[in-house]
Every structure is written in structure tokens, then in C-alpha cells.
Length: 364
Image (cartoon, rainbow, N blue to C red; front, side):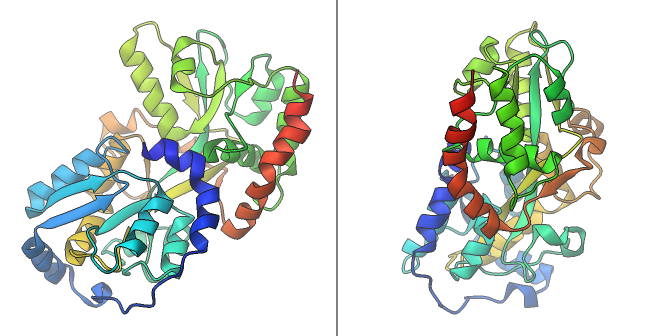
């Protein structure tokens, strides 16, 4: 649920939610002034943490929650929802809050802070987190991220592309999904733009890339779905790496004949993170802080990697059984995060129309 809803409503929901009236309510606790021992002591007394958008099946959250319960005796519940719904719920429930922590797309982190919906907490691993992946005071911190990647059905395509340039040299069709609605598809265009010298402020190189494919009859016009991939109806598709790796594992588990290969384009791609936000009105703020602490610990980062998400901490040594299933680090060398979310928001507003007019209108 989370992934589907995130993809479809991400950018539109940002705009809708921005119109809500924020609260200037004073924060309940100053977590950054407290030692981890004191936070742990108080969290154990609360003995409960309630999350939103952090279901067991997403990025292997199940093992994180098991760890939090085993190590600290804190019980857990989750309600799955999109990022915009998470923040709207924090706002709506401020008089009688039930939720403590949420996991939101990176662009929603600054929005949550702007609306006064967060309690800052930096965690003991603060210095090991890249600057682009955190707020200066810890109002939001990215725990893991995805990078746009190619998934190739090797039964249909002998040589799996490893760059956008490779795709231009091929003869197979490429699927990206609905660029007018899906965030994942929009980021596929941005990834191509980055590889071709553009960025979130200049999407034209990405438009030109897909226009070339469309005019050559190489743009798949169908739905980009799990079912079509598994049935062999799609040759090459662009997906977040953790989804592509998860699909690959599922397909190969379901069929001994399945052969899929996943690569991050080495000539450039886009990265996007998911950040924890602690509810400003959290009924269990210490348990929420301890949960964030666990997520950014070595154990928590490895748990996320088991769900094919890329841990934000590059210093964590992954077990061999986990590392062997991940894409080699070298392929991420030219992948870049979105730096200007306001510019990207503006670009996305126009992207759907441009996709229809400049690309689909020329598709063979």
C-alpha cells in the first residue's frame, strides 16, 4: 500500500498539504539535550511506540520492530499510509494524538518541520549521516534511500543495459510507467536527465532521451506492473533499486527459469531518501526517539538492507549474505540526490503535460 500510494500521490499531495495550517505548539520534550541512557530509561517506561507508514513488509521493517521489542521491551503497532496522510494525521490528532513516528519521502521532511509537526532528535550516529540526508537539528533524518535502476528480463534481452547510453544502442522496449501520475516514473525521467547533463531544474535532456526512444518505437506504452514484468511482457524497466531487487528475488523464487538483472545506470541517476519524523504531539516521544536511534544503529541499517534498501550510513559493514544481494557500490558513483525540492516540485507540475505532448504524441 505505502509504495503504490507514495508513487501516485507524492507531488500532488505536497501541494495539497502545504495549504494546511500548521501549529506553533511548543515541543513537549527536548530530546537533543538528553543522554541516550536517559532516553532509553524513559522509553522503557513508556513501553510502546505507534508508527505510521512503517509496515512489516516495507524495507524489512519487521526485523526492526522485532529488534526494538526484544532489546527494549517496547511493543509496536503500525498503520500504513502515504507520506501526506501521515503528516495530515499528525496535524488532525494534535489534540488527542495516537501516533509517535512516521517514515516519509524525503521531500516531506522539510514540510513536516515547516508545519511544526516534528520533535528534533539527532541520534548518537549523527556525524555518520551525510548532510543532504538530515535537517540541521534532526527534525528529519533519512534512514535509507533508493536510486533509479534498470531491471532487465534476461530471457528477452541478452545484454542487460548498465547505462542510459547502453539503452540508446539497444533494440528492446523500455517501460517507465505513467509519468503524469507516478513519482517513480517522474524520477525515471529525472534520472535520464541527470545522466545526460541535466538536473531537477533542467529536465530537457531527459525529455529528449525518451523522445528518441518513442520515435524509434522503443517506448513501452503499457502499465508498468509487477504482473507484466513477471509474465515477460516487459523487457527493460526503470524502478527504484530496492523495488527492482525485491521483484527480482520474488520472480526467481516463484520460477526456477526466471532470469532478471538489476543495474544502477553508471552514467548518472537520481536518489531519493525516506526519513523518520517524530510527531511533535507524540504520546510516547522517548520510545519514538529510541526507535530512530535503533534504525540508524548498525543493526537497524542492516535490517533495512535485508529489505534491499540502501542504508544511509556507508560505514556499516553489511553481512556477506546481505551484501551479495545488493548492487555494487561502484554503480552508484554518479547517482545524485535531488537538492532543490522546490525546483523539482515546479518541474513535476509541467512534466505530465510535456510527456504527453513531446513524447507520447511521437510514440510509434
